Image 1 (cartoon, rainbow, N blue to C red):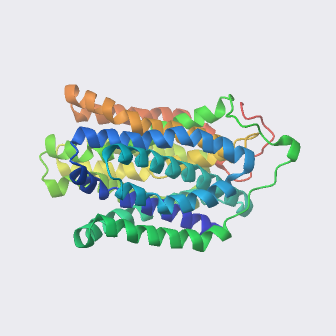
Image 2: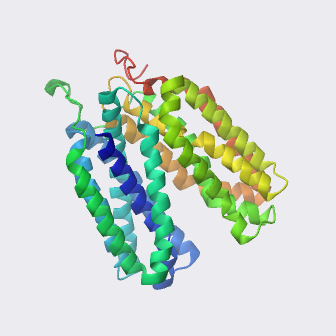
Image 3: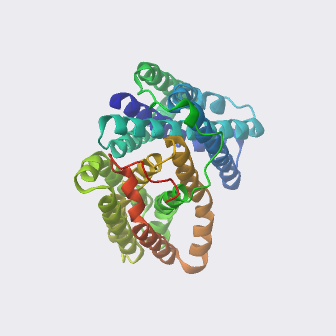
Length: 383
């Protein structure tokens, strides 16, 4: 069970990572400006945001396993129509679909990971996200090499074959959904109980800084701190490296100290790291700050999603859908706001503002108690 759901995270990350080096190739092929590329990526984001709530409701109704079985196959094939799109309009539509199936699988595999946690009675969510990070790293690193040697079409062909083989190898070994009483199956709707949205706020404030470092870290190093092109890439590289390491040890940390303590110290590390980066006097200090921030950011989202999937009185798909949508909405909308702040006040002020988000996470850290395996389910979801 654990190997199968870990493979789903690895494959999903691999496909998403393979998309990144494809962007410049598609821009050249279709003669797109940077702003046009931005709109296309926005289409991908909207695909995720629109489909995710539907997927969460479907999972609540029929379970995560049927959705995961279908979406893992769709995701493995999803980049083929993107690379073969004959024009910009079709490309935008295919990216919308790509974002939708990625987002749908994201919710389903996180819900399945919650089921595995309950069955094993121990944490596995952080390591699952570690496999996603590893898959993303493999996809992004290999994608550029494959495109350079064989072209984008061949790259996506290879990615599709590998992803499909992984999906077919493990789809039959996924954990079955936990039994639900027939008369207690939830209706096809999201909940109005406040707790999922509080957990979603934790996910939102944890994901926005990660996206900001990805989008603006390199420019901050180059524009404000005078780093060269090669060195500036280490901004997100430092975060990605520390996040990957910490996610693989995160389950043991959470099992040892509990989810609330884990999320509190993670928020402290993440906030302090961003403060160090924002007040850096040179590139090396900023990179060290980003790396420290990555140590904290790594396990905030996995713990938040585990808490969302274990909220009393709610099936995993509903809470995870809400938390994931709120987190992704921040990644979708925050970069423009951060760019506006940076344009008028500098990136230092922007990153200091992002560090303040972790103070809110720290204040809301008690909601992470639902992530602890064995948490009582007697309390209502709106407590």
